[in-house]
Length: 469
Image 1 (cartoon, rainbow, N blue to C red):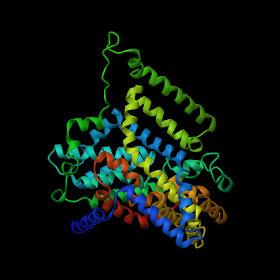
Image 2 (cartoon, one colour):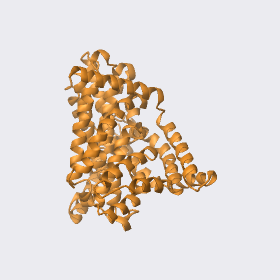
Image 3 (cartoon, one colour):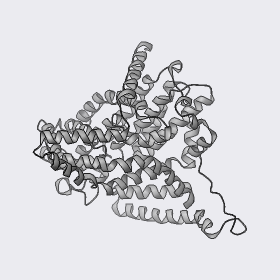
Image 4 (tube, rainbow, N blue to C red):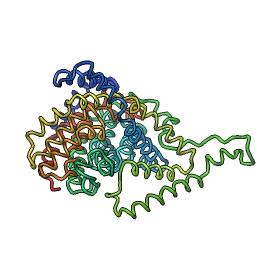
């Protein structure tokens, strides 16, 4: 047992060393993928160099609406995760792990459970919990290996597409989605709320937890938070992560030192009334539709989390400050989304996406189609790391093939989404907010997350083929 674990740990360290040497930062990753897509389109399609530059620019601005929805998912999820209530529970839970193996496994479980329900919450909860666990160990004189804790925090992104925040699932549940003529409106009750998706979620949770447990190095070989992010051990940094910032009162107002504008900004009544109004709409809408599985789409999902954030932060000022803090983590998304949309433009405008999809789908049968869709989603995620963006490129192809083969569209959505979240463990795009919070580099965590991706490969292949729908 000990020998097997030491071999796994050595392999993990080798992968970490490789990623530190070879993996660029996420923006350069986007640039390199743009070049690869451009060269591939010139080689494999009739479009020439100039036409593919036109395709690139033609796609550059096509995902702005979706990008805003993704930014809102991230920042509203951040605000919920960074609330005093959630952070206080995480801080108490962080004192439980006593060894590196327990610390890595516990961080992964917390991140994945949160990520299942909301990928934005999971990403931020995973980052915050990794910091809290590392800090709790440091206070007790223990050295928990900080890179694997941060990697464990990122595993929230390997389960989210079988949960209710699945972008492809939410998009396909929207009445006017792009492929409604092909697959119709597919409510979440036919995609993520099925035994197929639940079974995959359980497999992911169990497999990743065990993998992280075995990957964690012994304390003698661990590198703690003080080596990577010593500022996070300082009192002011810790408070910024776990407690809301109290606004400074103005001194030119009334007896309480606040002027009318400050009273409105700090009014619990304003936040409560606004949140209550949003809650009334949510309840009324759900009552009309019947079930949340039938009602959820991207806009309603964000609406729910804005209301939840208002209730948790209690005042408009506190909520706005949480959103402001969250936007730093969204900076990479804002910059890189147009570049990934440009890649979308190249591979869709040139016809490269159709060639890739047809090459894989030609060998599909009703039984093997989920596995083929999973592989296709995994490959496409390397070029366009956005579940909804990828679905915008190949959703019609996957949907039409599923209908032709007699595969339920909801099952096809889950299979595709599994591929998307699978290669998130190699593609560092969605790690940007976590990297900003934890103060580590992509290369510090990707060696471990790539092992998670490798271990999950046979698990996904078997699960997608055999699990009941």
